[in-house]
Image (tube, rainbow, N blue to C red; front, side, top):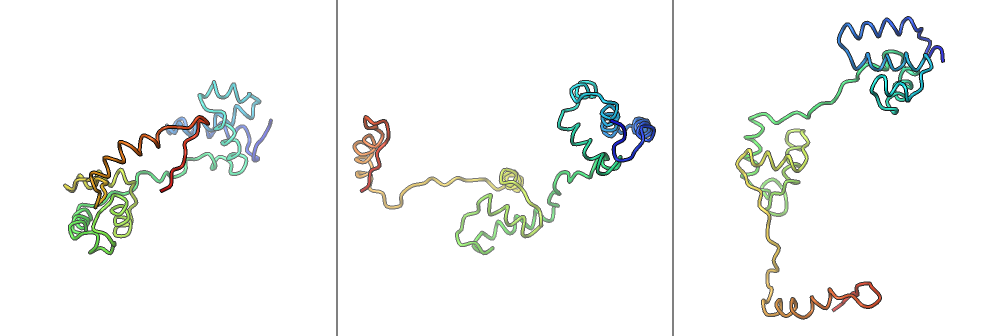
Length: 183
């Protein structure tokens, strides 16, 4: 297979030794993969020898062809998103205490989605709704789920509907498909 990207075998071997000496085992693995690939080893043999996935081999070979040894260096990982500082948490608690209407929402109910939106706007930090629940709990707020109930439901009509209408909706005709009931 010869050279890839104009780098000699000797240069590659020196980089392999250097990465091993420095304890950069990820780079060592990538460079060793390239060396074995250049020597004509099959991807299956490389997978077994280096304990690496087939996709990684082709990805690293492509990076090496396009960018040389530098293309195999680890790029910066974004890492964990920053956390809210103590004073930001206090400010968030104040906002929550004042209520969603005071903040500009149309209804008086805080949802995790809304609180996440406030955190994003106020502090520039984005959290998943599940993590927003943890923050609310940390601040001493409890998540409450409203019970869905018709405001003016007549209990007699509700019982009649449950006993007579609802069972009829559950039954399926002989054709095997449910029917649509309109009223």
